[in-house]
Length: 144
View 1 (cartoon, one colour):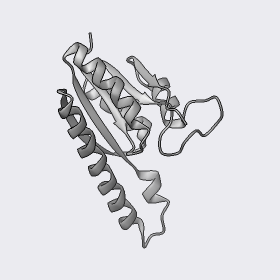
View 2 (tube, helix red, strand yellow):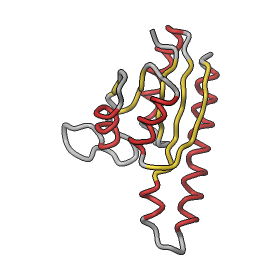
View 3 (cartoon, helix red, strand yellow):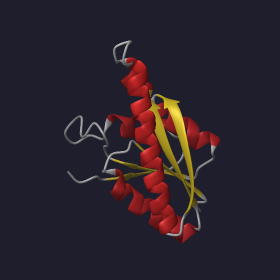
C-alpha cells in the first residue's frame, strides 16, 4: 500500500516522534522513506542584506545535519532512505516533492520549529501541507 513515504523535517527535535511512525509504516510495507529538508527562503530573505548569505549557509548546514541524522536513524532501523534538500516555501516544496516523487504517504508532526502558533490548531506548515497535498497525510501529535 505504501511504497514511498515522505518525511519532511525542519531539524527540530519534534521530528523524532514522527520518525518512529514513519519507521513502523516503512517496515510493515517494505517502503522507502524520503527525508526532505526545505531551506525556508523567507528566513534568509528577511535577514539584513549583509547577513543574508550567512543566514542561508547556516540553514544549509542545519539541513545537512538534520538529513544526516535521520538517514542514520532510518538505516539503523533497516529502512531504505533517500534524502533531498529544496529551497523555497516549506509547504509548497513539500507538496511539490510529494507529487514529483509520487510518494504514497506524507508523515508530518503537528508542529515543528515555530511551536504551536495557535492553541488547538496544527502548525502553519502542517496545516498547509494537509490542505495542499493530494495524497494521504499522517499527522503525528507532537507532545509539548
